Image (cartoon, rainbow, N blue to C red; front, side, top):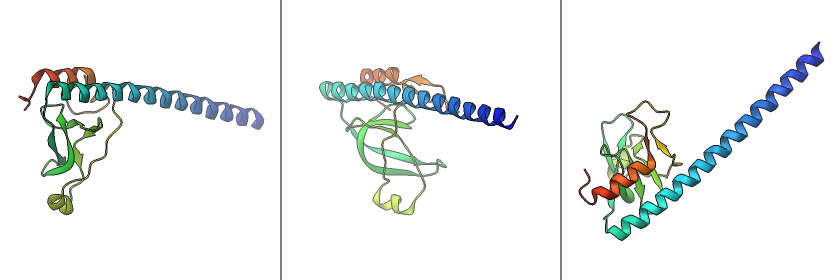
Length: 143
């Protein structure tokens, strides 16, 4: 009986590991497709003469805004996500910091998803391709 339970537990562990590996492979493939869209956006923005701006980030509590060291284009009118000149995808929220108030906030690119806002509670999910196309179409008249 104990051998059967041990075998069953091992089988379950293996099944979970296989599912986790498949999920990770799917996420990596999604990130590669999203990065290709971002690279294309940066190229097209340059061709259209869209000027990048120094990006600002909000604190997690929403009370403060900080300049960053990244230049790029906001994708949403609420300025919560952006594409950097480097093709990186940036979620523009940072931990509140006195140092960042004076020296600027440090940003690191996030793994891009094909659906912006998927799984989150803020706003409606929207395809990344749609956001990028809207931004290109708006030109320099972006909020």
